Image (cartoon, rainbow, N blue to C red; front, side, top):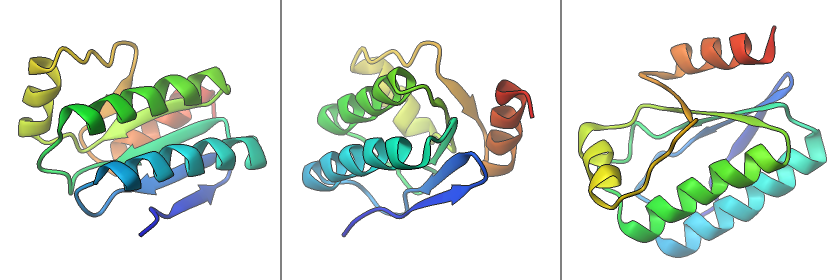
Length: 118
């Protein structure tokens, strides 16, 4: 099952509604990069409130998605990181440095608009 990627003005909005398996995570990575290229999106909000657990592979893919999006010129905001996910990321040594985060989707969209100068 593919993760929907919605376009909102110059931004892409992704709300991940279920735990990710390895194949879905890789498909999401590819889909998002193609969508950034196709739409010339300047910003991406990835909402992960529904994710209660993250393993090392999914954490790496998420970090890669953020880095790749930045290389393509899109600023990324991650919203809704659950406490267990934050703990796991740190325990795995995955540092999402220079990554914008927000507590919820509204705050994330607002933060992205500020970053983009809108």
